[in-house]
Figure 1 (cartoon, rainbow, N blue to C red):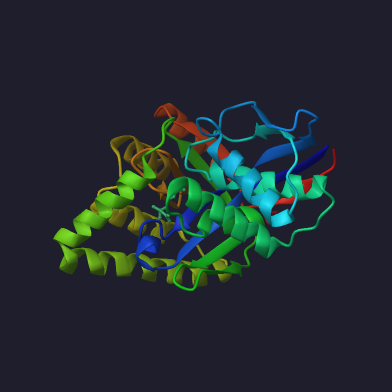
Figure 2 (cartoon, rainbow, N blue to C red):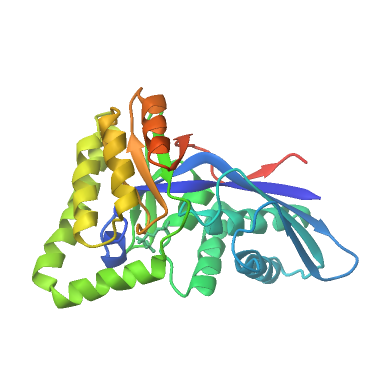
Length: 303
Ligand code: PMV
């Protein structure tokens, strides 16, 4: 038996703008998905999971298929999944499960796989299952840490930061990423002269945020501006806004939705006020999770 794990992620800056070529900043969180792989005599694929990541496990199936063809071996496998964060919440469970499945299988077969190949295969799994996906999730879950994502070049650069505590507020349901991306595209087609500057400004926020993070400065103000712009392009929700305002009232230096929006999660940068902020989000009916940005990406686990 072999076991591997990979972290979930949050997007700090640049969601939606990244679809139009602007940079994004995303980080791995200290909550992971664990995947075990074992050979079965039956010769077919069996999947068991504490919580269903996605109906019928399409990511795991595709990851097994791509890993088998990359490694040149096709065996019957029993795959087991355990998760430390709610799947399908916008925290990158599909990329994390894809990447840890590939790593668990290569470990089981005694073949090493480097991180570049792992991230590339993970991204392919997401593209095949979803139709389209940026490199953000697969890169973050593979390499870990905080990354500056350049979508046009399909490259990422690590951002060196100290401890970065964040409170995540989960609405309990996921916004439809595909639908929201289409909504923004339509809005942009109808109002290019208004939408283009907004999207460019989101890119500028991301670039400035990188500098502030590297200098150890507060990014709260930039998160608040970004939230306003995300609202203006129609991807906010009443629930997310309630959590965002509650978090700010409780002392967060900045708060915004993270990921596609519409539902899913928001994040608050709280600098020492984590407990108060988490309580304020829960009082509004959200599920609050305190997370740290984790340097650790995908890894092989001891059995
Ligand atoms: O909700 P998530 O984690 O799938 O984030 C979506 C981020 C978008 O920028 C809206 C889409 C993308 O592919 O980058």
